[in-house]
Amino acid sequence: MVANVEKQLEEARELLEQMELEVREIPPQSRGMYSSRMRSYKQEMGKLEADFKRSRIAYSDEVRNELLGDDGNSSENQLIKLREERAHLLDNTERLERSSRRLEAGYQIAVETEQIGQEMLENLSHDREKIQRARERLRETDANLGKSSRILTGMLRRIIQNRILIVVLAVIIIFTILMAIYFSVRGH
Image (cartoon, rainbow, N blue to C red; front, side, top):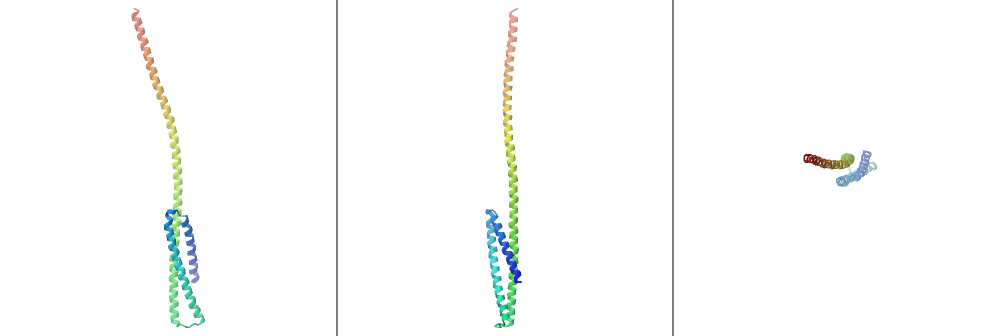
């Protein structure tokens, strides 16, 4: 049973170390919340380890006294004390398991947060590419609109020149016809 508790304590320490590494990689704005959780987990872990050491020392002292035949206490008192220590050890084991489950849950949250952050970065990257493509199309459209504007301005200028030319020709033809009529009427 003691070996089992030591094994679970070791696993909990390793989980704490992994979580601490994960917390260091979290963006600064959300790191504070996880850091405070880590401190409370570490404190609880320290308490559990201290309780375990005390229970183990008390248990080993009692076993040693029993083996050496130290009958300073009655066997009933020793039995009661052993049961109390056993209950205390079981209680510490339960607390350690609960803490381990909470540590694992915290680690899962950190992993999920990292995955969400990764997905957000990928989405932002895709959005950036879309914006750059849209900006490039906008530049091309702007260039095409500039060319179209120049062409339309040139066409409008030619239309105005053609109308002026038609009006001038019409005036010349009318003037020529009037002159022809005038000379023909005057000549008769």
